[in-house]
Each structure stands twice: as C-alpha cells, then as structure tokens.
Image (cartoon, rainbow, N blue to C red):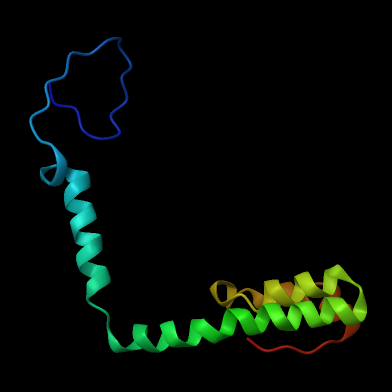
Length: 110
C-alpha cells in the first residue's frame, strides 16, 4: 500500500517504509517548481514590485493622518480596506454599501 503526503489513516496503525525522500517526493518537486517560478519574473512583475514598495507605506501614512486629524478609527480602517489592491473589484461595495465613507461623502477611487 502506498501513502502520500496528507494521507488520512482511518483504519488504525500503519507500517510504512519510506521509498522517496527530500527532493524526490511530491512536496519536494512542488518546492523546486515554486523556487524556479520565483527566479523567473516577467516584466510586469518587476513594475508591480517597485509599485508595492511605495504604495503600502503611503496608504498607511494616509490612514494614520486621517486617524490623527479625525480621531475616528472607522475612517482609518475604511481607508485601509478600500485601498487594498486585492479587493479592487469589491472596493466600491465597501465604500458605497452604506459604510462610513459613503455616509461622510468622502470620494475615493480604485
């Protein structure tokens, strides 16, 4: 009987003999593929990496300034949620869905 990484044992104890180890296993092959993919970057990824270096600190600074001047944590959190690039499709739903930003009529773009 062969067992693989993540196999569930539902019947009791198993006697297992290791036939492959390290880079020969499925997880080892996945790891080498991930490392290989990380080494080859397409040009757009280089642009995105340079963009991220200044975008995140800028957004945090804007949220901090908003918190400092308004003393309202809801505004700061709203800025962080709406400016999150991974939620670009849903940022309008957060902003205009009856949230804090739409009630204060603060404009934003994604």
